[in-house]
Length: 427
Image (cartoon, rainbow, N blue to C red):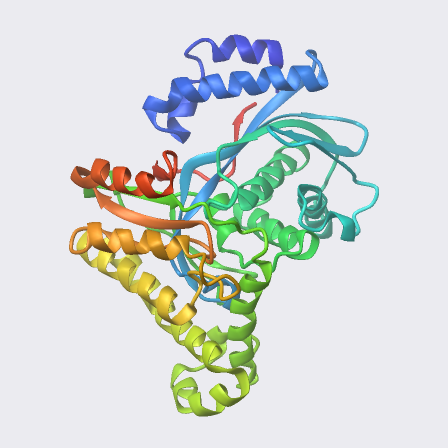
């Protein structure tokens, strides 16, 4: 731990440059140091100048393959990105967690009561309480801390700002009170527990796992209690493409029931076979029983199950293509995934508002510009928000220009793959 005055002095030198370069790009070291310096000053304004602090970071994530498969114990391919949530943190002896995030009011959670608070549903306090409860439920230590936090993982961007925040909280409790012994996998599971039980969103585990583990990861959730995690060795910088996330400006605020319906309909199909999730259903049995399932669960449930089975296969093929440096095959699989999400999973727009289809418009633009050259698909939960595009570097400026002309000047984000997940940056 280090006092904020000393931290600010060292941030003004090159002492931490190698640390920052290992997490972010070398060309971003100066801007990141300025960001952390600003946060240190905010911490002092909130909590005083004599506190000893640590610095923590947790990245956002990009879903590369496995759209809406994790919640039915499927497979995903994901990667952590260079946008992250960071915090300057100091222990307190009050058994209260205080987190002041830039642009938001202070969250203050008394750890004397770890029960679910209905009035906190959908609010960040519920995530603080839920992560702490998850640690306690697993027999780990918890305690109070004060934190000044900032995030450049855009809310509603499909980059999982909530998962980054949850993993950040878990990383803090891990190092402040548990000597860093809680694994990245457990932190992800605790984060999912907080979002499911306390925040009230029935998400799968992919978001939290990608944020917590870091880099390119293939994750098999057949047994969510013991997910199989394989890092995929691929040098993205060598493929001469840019990874772009396009924020179409859609609002996720009223879409919880849409996300829940995807999971619920897949599970309704599984229930016809006496199973809890689609991963445990034999595909041939599913095919033979489509007429019965249509009658009992509906056509959309059948289509969403079709998406699940095929998307699960694509994840293996995508990881194999990356591992063998066959980027052309990988792009073709990305496009196939996008078509499947559009036609079968049907998470591109909500039927509640058929005239509002920003994701559909973005995908149409990508098809026109990138067909035969790049790849594109819906990104994340869908229905609103973002798409993902792999754009040849020599087309990047043209692509950004057309996208920004439709969705706004800051709608296209060019990302990097971050090599680490949730970390303690500086003692």
